[in-house]
Length: 265
Image (cartoon, rainbow, N blue to C red; front, side, top):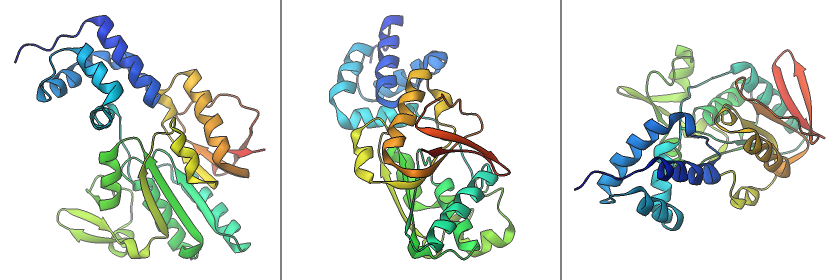
């Protein structure tokens, strides 16, 4: 097959399309993106970027494959543990009051955050039937990994030996989460900029950590506005320590010993 044709303007067009769909600003990684895309296109017998962009717009299956290719997934169990503990302690307080608690992890990547919350909830004796955790991600491959619940040694590096023994089955050389010990958990392939987000209902707590570092200011504002629509009044949202959170009068910023979270007003 001939060399993949991709002019600078074609590449920028693709990067803009990807940004509109996912929020990811890939301009600083354009050469890496170009190489990834060229390899992908050759495997699909597509010989130029214009054809690829057209297919990206209209072919849902191909679009999902490309989004899987360009999205970044890097996480592990108990990452930024103070925030996780804060979220679960708040969830437990709400459940003691007699209610069922819903937590959203967006994005959930490969599931470590969701299962970390499940482990922490179990460890403090929270009623597993009063807690539901939903994990969503734009990357369908990651959602399948979440459902499989199988993790390598690096993913569980922050867990104690007793936690690994209790909450996982050892499947050499990996670890598989014991789903029967977890609260109610579901995973879905959802783009936060798609209105399918609103079909998930209302949540008491949202964790969206280290996603907005890939967004520009306009998409960061759009992100927190969309989350506000599915967060209950006085609900909490936790962002990552590296996220740049724009000002928004929909939230009050709270700083305590556990770190920082935002409360819907």
